[in-house]
Image (tube, rainbow, N blue to C red; front, top):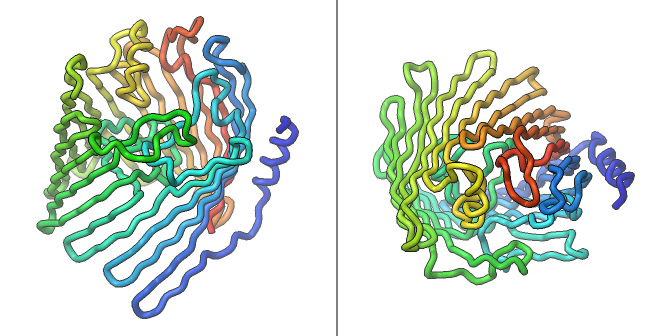
Length: 407
């Protein structure tokens, strides 16, 4: 596709039109609902000036996603399925990098099909059944598992977490799991989660093998209780063969500001890897004029103390997003008008003093459609000959535009 074709595609995606209503059918015992979601994405990026890491200095790309969602409820049972179709150019898959490639959430490649010269993907993002009673809920199949308490840095969100600068979080990727939630009192709950593990296989469309590695199946137990203003949780888990114990809490202090935290100790299965500790602490304040401010700090013992160790840390693959030991995030969001919403986060790496400013805005075009824009501004020394001088300095300057419609 030429640059002219990308501009035409984005123009077509931004034209307003009437969206169709979702389909719904029900009788006395059964309800079936079909919903849809589509998004068009445009990207313009300027990569760091390092020919070893990036084959393209400037990137201009576009892509489209379509999601068909079906929900079925019958008495105490329900089922959910999300089918996603995407068409992405090579520019969006690699971002102009010589080494980067889109890797899916860690789940079976058996429900993912790639065609159209590798540009089109059809996959099942959610497929599960659920039983629910007054105090018990059991869900089996591909489903999102969210165990985060803090917003930007989420060390206890072990399965397909979001990056701190990700603002659109409506659909978290599903993983192959079983989950049991038992509410054993009015204010206390016990959750048991088991998630299948897959070996990395870059020859597959998702980057993962089709069959699970049963010996590395993850198990997570979380017990939580609610007091007057706070919820407290304890976590015990085995993930990728490592033993984990952790905590989380969230609540209001004097009905004036929010206080949140989560973290864990990780005891590595490999003898040559030291025990890791990660935690995130956050405070937030929301005013009646819709302004919300957040301050969050993240620490990981396994992170690098200086940029000379970044290469080794990244190859170890122990953390998908963050290379250093200490980070701080300052964020804000505000509703400028009932139709226009803005969000921003400033990330600071304490080891190399690099920064990332991420700006995001959404405008509601109708009850079913919206237009958004995101801008990423990295600040820091750029890489040289494939060697990272700073973490955020190796990020591209980028602008993204999205048109989203729900039906």
